[in-house]
Amino acid sequence: MKKLVSMVQDQLESNRLPSVHPHHSMLYPLTHDQRKKIAGKHASLCLEKVSLLHHQPFRFSKKLPAGQRLRIGYVSSDFCNHPTSHLMQSIPGLHDRTKVEVFCYSLAPDDGTNFRAKVANEAEHFVDLSGIQCHGKAADKIASDGIHILLNMNGYTKGARNEIFALKPAPIQAMWLGYPGTSGSTFMDYIITDMVTSPMHLSHQYSEKLAYMPKTFFIGDHQQMFPHLRNRVILESAEDATAGRRVTDNSIVVSGLDIKPLLQVACVREVTYGGRLVEIHGSQRKEVSYFTKLTVLTIPSLQPIQNMIRTNSPSCTINGVTIHNGLVTQQTQSKASAGEEVPRDLILTSRQHYGLPEDAVVFCNFNQLYKVDPSTMRMWVEILKGVPNSVLWLLRFPAAGEAGALAAASEMGLQQVNRRILFSNVAPKEEHVRRGQVADVCLDTPLCNGHTTGMDVLWAGCPVVTLPLETLASRVAASQLHTLGCPELVANSQEDYVRIATKLGNNREYLQAMRAKVWKARESSALFSCRSYTADIEALYFRMWQQYEAGSIEHIVEWPSKFNKEST
Image (cartoon, rainbow, N blue to C red; front, side, top):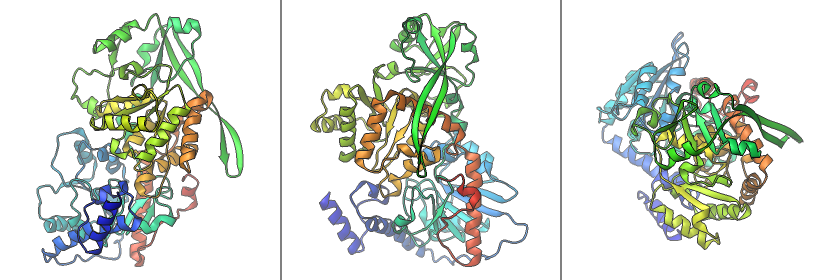
């Protein structure tokens, strides 16, 4: 690593394009200044390219004519089956058309998915720029539409065309959502973020001015994509019920938009699930109860379900009601599987599906394995040692990383490593989100958080423990948790991270209380509310425009009191 850091510094000093790409720079032990300069070199390259076009600068009015709406342009290559669309596909259609006029500019052709169709149909204007390869002509089109604020949703990710932004076809240009870092450029005015993700004492990391959302800058469309995960029925056998065995919320779960058919039988009961937490409100410590009602269906035997899973059968029946196997879909490439449509069936998810022990505490992380650095693995090993009856559930993402992860954990002193760290394959989107239900706690990767994957597991009702560092990519999960109302899951050190996770693993009531809190907060907090998010970002756009009219571009870090009451 020292050699790589030295090489990057030499490249920066000699005005060469660094070997480390901006999108990967947060993974290396570089300084904030080095990361910003790496991005800056790529931004300068864009400026050099467009200088060859000899394009005249665009001119803009400083005033919004009376009666004219503010024109917002979203530019992305990811209006398709991509995590970015999974997050924001509802935003264009939720804007207030009496105040703003929305344009979505696609940098990629139609992939034929519902994600593309939703954005195209719900945005007031949808423009496919993928056929306009000349950056100058693409910029001309945007300028001719009279865009006031242009959003860069790619940054330095695949499919980006930062050359368009280098031509400055709009008076205000801002980074938003799709790229976890600074552009390092002179042509991007703002980065839309929040006070947890980008506190002012870290503002030197960014070439842009900070524009705070009143809550988290992150958003997810899970309420619209996965409403079937709002409802659940917990299954238990008559034998377990008679023996008085403890009911858990995540061993065998049936999810569906309409669970009423399962409830038309006699053996249904409600179980109170949760516990008490000590929360800190200002200088006060307060004990708060968090409980939810579990709908529990007692069936004569779990054998039909176990047989369905063991034989990979597509479904089985319980009291005449068809239950579909959550691991086997009749059409593996169906739109419901991809998250394009909401499943209409009752779907069963169980620990048996993934070889997870029924009675263990299951810690999980569903990120790509490149995010797991040695310090993270050391914390995970310490947690597993501190919670004897626990396992860590990871993904073969990539498959080649499995052996390396096991070897690293073994070298760090974890015994029976093949029994303590379990792997599953990458799953289609709907299953990926749904299977988070059968884990107990997600252990976030501090180096580069789960951003979309963090939202996925939270929507499944699984608490996330995170440790914010200093980069934007390392602080997103903390922002999500603050907005969810769960700051107690945000650690302030490696020792604190281990302490929080170990307490969740060893204290059953604390775990149940936290799971009940997360389950209810999905609906009650603003984290998954695309409607309130759209209203907030719209208000932010108008504040940007007010600054522009006043002739200054400054940080926007304070909100009126009506927002502060609800902010993180």
